[in-house]
Picture (tube, rainbow, N blue to C red):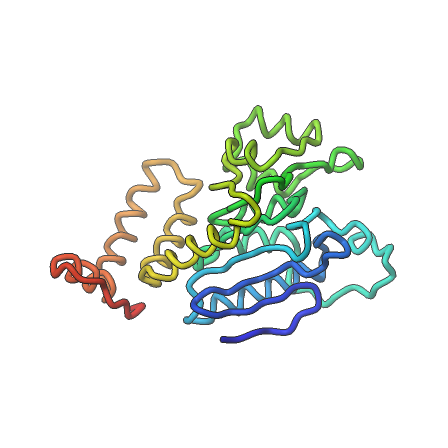
Length: 261
């Protein structure tokens, strides 16, 4: 059981789950360069920790993430520029290429850049009452980077409608669009997230890692290119100790004992 010290996030791992909380509730967990840098550090630490099987991301207080911290981005808050590990685009790429499944626990509003984090996660479970949307157009901006992850879930027409009108969807509408896997009442959110994270933690860690790496590698390929690549990745997966153990356990009608190799 370990915890790491940060300023704008909290990161704590236990039971195979790294729990990251956006911890800037007085600004509705708005995300700026300093928070991005801390998130990249926490994700890298989780990736290097063999005991971590999955990541749960949520927000402190009543919001998940209200979007970009315009005061910090513009320098209007007077704070010195943080020592950066990367920018928001690097963060979205870190989500997309994560070898550990990321579960977004959407406890409240997820807007703009916050919605991008939800869309970039592998699972997203939302509390009924949360709003998800792209309000950037209302302040003379456009959700440039997050459209790259939103278009993987939302239809072309609906995405353009969201972005051009600055729409905010309720959680049930977001689930219908594919932005959330599941919507539950706020009091049931922890149980729903724990169910998913516990299920992930019970799987072979090497199978999960190889599967996510293959999924990312084939994501933008056409069928003729994807299938040969996936054939090779399947051969690599079959050669692992966990694959042999899993097949033997199935034949012997017992639970597998994963080694992670």
